[in-house]
Length: 75
Image 1 (tube, rainbow, N blue to C red):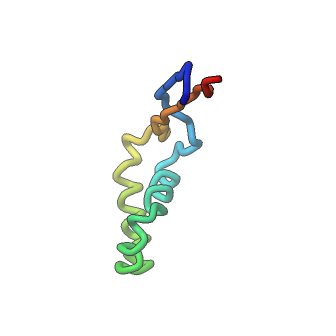
Image 2: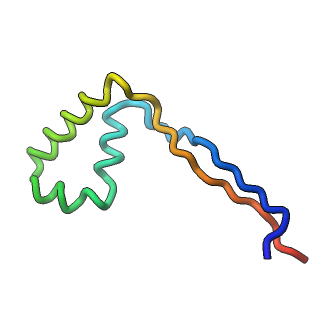
Image 3: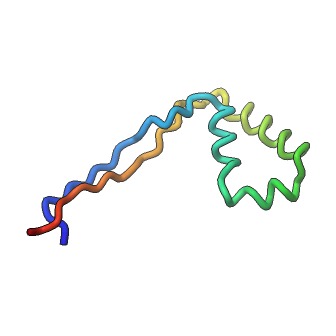
């Protein structure tokens, strides 16, 4: 059993600040793998360019909210 449990949610700077970085990160996620394979490298590159251009005007550093949990075991 955990006691003295503390839970915090806070954004974490993961170093993704440019649109190209965010698109690369997102498209590198497993749910996109099959789709990217199906459309092929040329269409995948075009999709990455188009989405990068689309988010460029509104891009802010990507800082996902992470849940931190700390506690100690009861003695």
